[in-house]
Image (cartoon, rainbow, N blue to C red; front, top):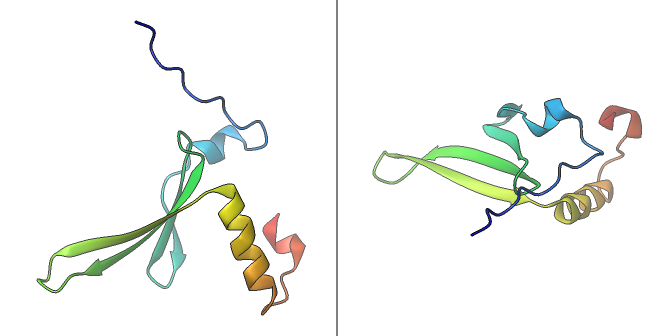
Length: 84
């Protein structure tokens, strides 16, 4: 039986970014890139009702991230130089 192949690496993203560790963005929000799923994971750790730690997570695919940026652009002037 053949092993499933890994998806090809995105040639538009450098190796360092594909293996990026979790980065703190601010306001209790962390981000990481998941190469296998080609998604950005946003994580907001919180304390649940019982006092136990609970992670609230959102996985952004490229198309959804683009929609989020379009949404933000309606309200804020985003300088393209900042995104480089």
